[in-house]
Image 1 (cartoon, one colour):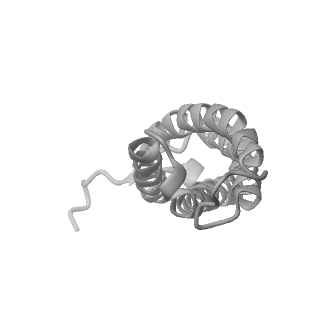
Image 2 (image 1 turned 30 degrees about the horizontal axis):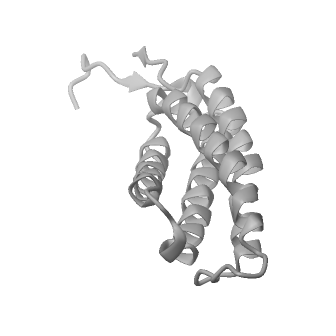
Length: 147
């Protein structure tokens, strides 16, 4: 290696707190994608118009998890923004599954009550995504020092 070559160092990525935050954000994004996949597959026959949106969220969350795992801190605000909108969708649609749990409704692949619980479980999960994504962004993973 050339003795005069510049070496780029990312000091904030070496911190234990930054590594833990990154791992937590990746895990939360993947858990959200998994939960949404289960809820989407379980309610597929009864979903009306939301299928493309839910599939897009799953793909987006897996992509965001991959990018965050590679220290792309610029996507953390995007993850937080997506989590805000997904939480709003879940708050609105969760109770609707419980309304289907009565007589006269045909059940989707999963019981409507189970789908309601899964959908509402996305809300606290998204709050955690927001909190940890903001924390990760504040840790300034992108700071570079040349030596």
